[in-house]
Length: 107
Image (cartoon, rainbow, N blue to C red):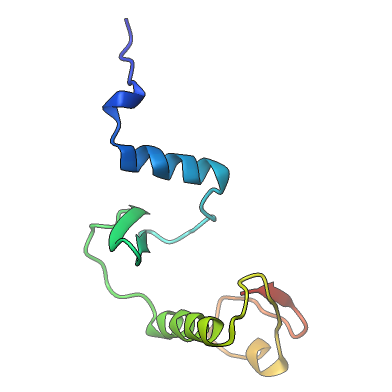
C-alpha cells in the first residue's frame, strides 16, 4: 500500500500557504535562489535554496526595488500602474533587461 499523507499530518502554516499559492501562484523566477519574506509576521514564506550562502545580488537592483516600494507607499501608487520606458532607461549599457523606448511595464 503506498504512503498516504493526510491533511492532519501537515502543519497548518503550510496548508494556508498552499491554499494561497493555489489561488495566486508565485511568478516565475529564474534566479538560482530566492526567498519570500512576510514582513508583517517576520517569517519566511517560501523560497528556493534560501538557506544556501551566496554572494549578494546586484545592489542596484536591491536599491531600485526598495526605492520603488517606498515611493509606492508614500504616493499610494498601485502595483498595477503602467510605467512607460523612456529613452534614457532604454539606452542604458550593460543591462540584460532588453528595454525599448515606449515599452510599458507594470510596477
